[in-house]
Structures are given as C-alpha cells and as structure tokens.
Image 1 (cartoon, rainbow, N blue to C red):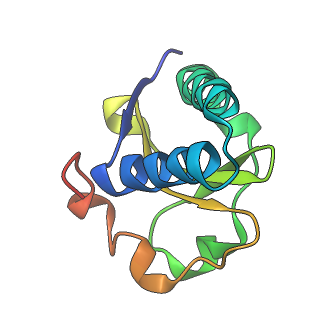
Image 2 (cartoon, rainbow, N blue to C red):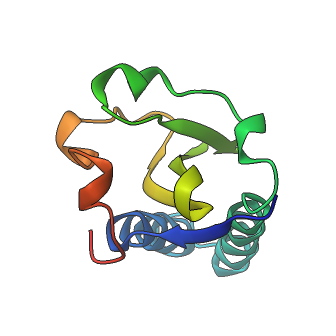
Length: 115
C-alpha cells in the first residue's frame, strides 16, 4: 500500500531551523544541504510501510497513534491516516530536545499543512 506523505508547516519550520543551525553555527553549508537531502529521502520513504517505525513514547499524550523515525540525532514524528492513505509528519526535533505537549496537534482533525 502506498501512502501520500504530507508535512505540517510547524514540522517544516523545525527542519529549516535545524538546517540553518548546521549551516551557520557549525559553518557547514554543505553538511546542511546533505542533511536536508537525507531528511527529504526519509520523509519520502514513509510512503511505503510507515508502520515499520516504532510508536513514539509521546504517543501516550495523543488520541491518535504517533510514530517516530530517527535521522541521525534528529527525530521526525508522524501519524498514519489509514482511511485516506496518508502519512502526516507533524513534529520534528533534535534528539537532545524534549517534546512539549503543545508541540503536537490535539487531534487528527486539526492536522493540516498550516499546522
């Protein structure tokens, strides 16, 4: 089964911030570009077998299933909508950061690209 993959504006912003940090604070624009391509490939790979990734610890906070995939030390959080065959990347963070409850949508109905 092939899923359509979407990413919320909030998750996109967190990914951009991390890439900017790599490019500027670590003075590594090339590494930032490589990292962004790796993130992009990982997100694209969610279209097939997204359930191969584990349920996130933060799943306990949600009324929907929350899964995670690690890309090095960066973590992408996503949910799977079986009825529409969609995967939504809803949050992203560096592994050393903590997820806050307000980082995640309250319910699946509030997930959209502007979140």
